[in-house]
Length: 362
Image 1 (cartoon, rainbow, N blue to C red):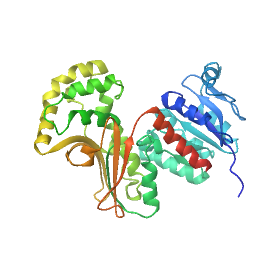
Image 2: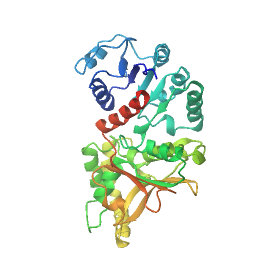
Image 3: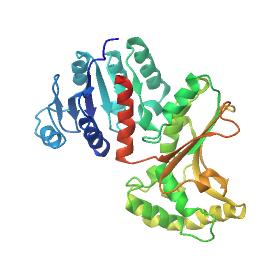
Image 4: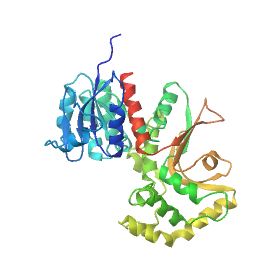
């Protein structure tokens, strides 16, 4: 069997995850199966078909010194001329996500932690599938759910080997995990909800505007991605993540607050409501957790605040901003398959992207 050609890698997005990925990519010992041919930021781009010839200490200055500006349709044309190429999208851009079909149609693989394409409306998702089938170019998105945790591939393996998935449930948001691990415990008392959110924001666990976490949209996107990996649910969410039943924890009165600072300043007005929820759970011997559920047997996909007994793994096994996902299947029953660990952070997210890149060359 002839060796696979060196894979030409074009990286779009050089922020925290992108920078970490570049470091991991350039650190691979020879013979490196990857050739870095393009880097693109929001302002500049570099391309060299035979490789950029940069190292860990020079790529950033080389990119900032470029006079070329980003043009992704042109990049797709350039990559299509190479023997084997992959687009790595480290952005969270909807505009970039909508270009995936164009790259795939040209035979260019797509690897990404960007959730937008795979949790968007059915039309975009179908276009991605169709383009991939037409050319054989692959799309890999392990790090869209759980960063570097093997969640997406585990589900795909369960389905591909003929197991019947009954239900998936988990704490999918590192932010929500941190908030409720600290807010809702078996011990009486505890900090006010608003103070936990404020500390989470100060530590950088939330988005600059915490409402972007508390509205549940991030969890809904991850559930849409998982649901679409299950054949019976592939077309069940026509509008993507907005079709997921999602409970927002943003108080209605704060829904129009545009400033993250003002939001956390006003959140104490609603501490009594959250305290009531906590005490109701505690009276039942339970804790509160914001979870995502894909109930395959009943066709329900939802993100909601739920109560779990203090003996449940969601109460006993989580720390910090960990994620935990349970797969209930015919084979993994009555004891589910559990994947748990750090579900956020540049290093582990980049590792998830790198693991997908390795699947293309190994």
